Image 1 (tube, rainbow, N blue to C red):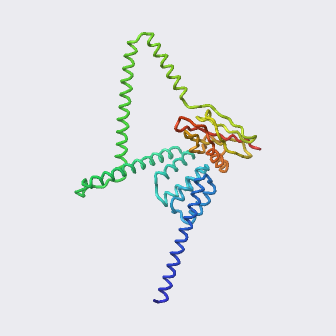
Image 2: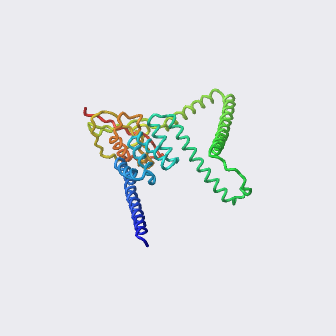
Image 3: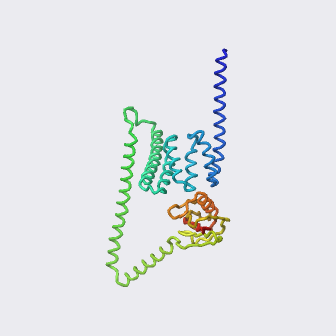
Length: 323
């Protein structure tokens, strides 16, 4: 074997080893970054994902994960940029479209956000229908394509057919609902005409009672104000104000500027906070470190049990600045 051949083999071997080493290194960083993201340590997670993306932007779903972390700390423009880059290197998926739409909504690009969310819904629907179709084809043994002459439909044609089907289903449901309402209305009219004034009074009273019951079952709009210290007061409201707080985290916030940070939360029947999302529209402060802290601390609250499967509301961090 000549020296040139040996040199080429050695060069290729070194290249393969280096590539494998880089892959392993990025994999290790990815595991760490993903763990930081899952434990709500968003800034640290972003730093680790950035290390991966600087080496290989197409590595797994690093761009999407970094965009998710940026969204959590209200860096919506950064979220948008990461998702756009993800579209280029990884393609479009319903998950990336949904996050992109949320970022656009928070950037007040309402029309684009609405169109994006609709597209994501259509992709999810078509994916589900496609899977069902494939299963049906498998079960039928492929006999429908015996001639081999059927023309494959374009994505546009498929989307149009799906949209038409949805329109038909919605129209059918509306017809049924309107039909039932009309029937009920006519029946009620006949009963009202045949009843005496006394009976009608009873009906009115019953209706009043029903309305009163519905009001009692409506959302809890009370507010629970919790004084933490001279720099911070918490306001729990919009559906959770009347639910007793069993455990609240220790919170220390120091800021030069006064303002509000609103965090929308959802709580399960056991009192655990399942989700906490920064509400930019109802906030006057958007400092990333403060937002990240507020979101993380909101997830540490624990409420009393409820017979409702899930209740959502808002925790407002009212910050008194020192300036």
